[in-house]
Image (tube, rainbow, N blue to C red; front, side, top):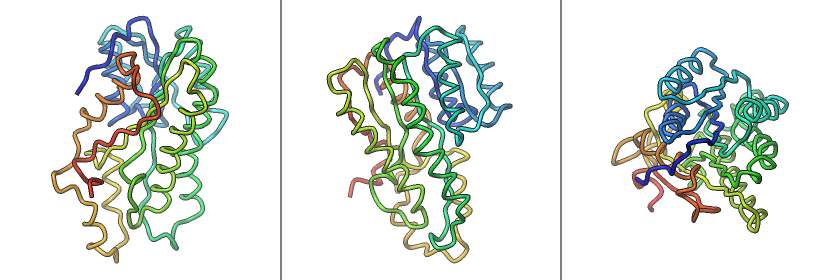
Length: 254
């Protein structure tokens, strides 16, 4: 895996940073020298992430907010710029995952999935674009292998991740002639709290359908995905624009 470029003097905003992939991505960007604005609804987890970031010698700014609210998305971008004077990378890592029968999914869970997985990244990007144009920065969206192949009991999650993948490509086209990059990473299952929600599959779920997309080579390592997120956020990935990189141990190979 390629390492991120030098991020000293630069600033990144990472959502979902209280644990898992978000925390790992923030730490790798910090090791490259970036100051980090960490965002999550989990305040305690964010404080632990911020502590680890500061131990690496960078500045960390904490925003414990619910990204399901548009105003919060706009506010955290403003907070990052106010804290560091600039914004060079936006990493949309936060996500929610509610497996269930489609006909049994509550409106609350459907709307929350849509808000966190699709609407929040758009509002964050919308607010960040003016700042990223100034710094020739980058957006990295974390989608999923579920964006690329249909998966049973994940209709809402798959739809939002497919939407985010295509949003990434559409933004790459719209800003083709401007100094900003848009890319996505589509991981398979990782040992995170999000993936543990697969244990809440419907009791009468058809196991044969679930096994069709089981990782025969095992779960993907969080650090491997984080390395790609950090790489794409840096100038080392200057040749990547409109890409969606699959890291899924072959789940979507065929």
